[in-house]
Image 1 (tube, one colour):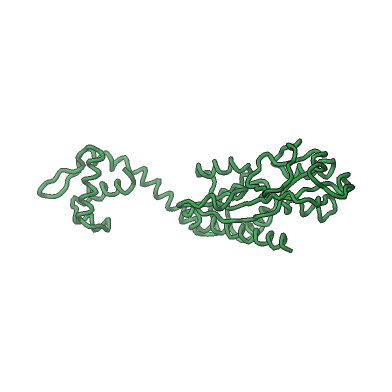
Image 2: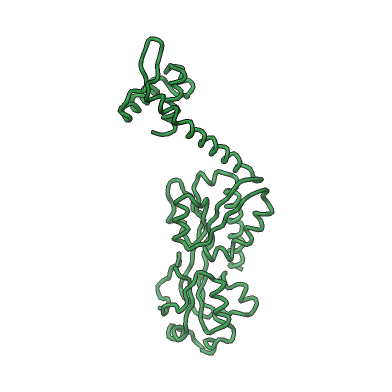
Length: 299
């Protein structure tokens, strides 16, 4: 039994007539009669007595109607919340982001979000890809942006929007002894310790890439990984955009080696959520920010 069944029982109880009820519920009388018979079979109980004056609700029908009032109140509350979310001046967005997205997209998105919305509460969770998906599927998050493949989320009721696809590169501090080698191959790479994120996310390695030793340092905190790389002989692998600031400042230098690894990211949202103004606005900001990053990477 769902809310439409409860509305059917409530309407017929109030009107006492299938003809009148079918008009209220915007359906035909035969269709309404079939729905009522199906519902009585499902509940294994008679809902109405048929009399010469019309339909009279049974004790079962009266019980259902009385218990349904709190549910109708909750439905009204939901409808009101949706109404509020159609405005950019109030509402709540629950956002989940992966660690790389947090660094290269989130700052600009937040700046624009604050500048273009009113009294909006924004709740942000930063976690690994598996945790984000668990929270999203449990409806704790309205949208998630992280190391996901858009093709993996072509499911009914969901929208997956590609964000950034970037080449994974290796970086080391300026002055690192590895730059003394004329050729940097797999043997040279494995002479030094590596730092890497805990989970590979959506990284893909093409054939012919070097086989690297297991990382000595594992962390999803890229700020930490970069600080360690700047101050030691650790090598670090990440999407090129992650190292952009440190490379421009002359703190890190990209190794002349093709790891043949790419990293993908996507934004995932339910189609019904995307139909509301605040989440839709947030999605547009992420799309704009990712386009700017793609332009920088292509330059």
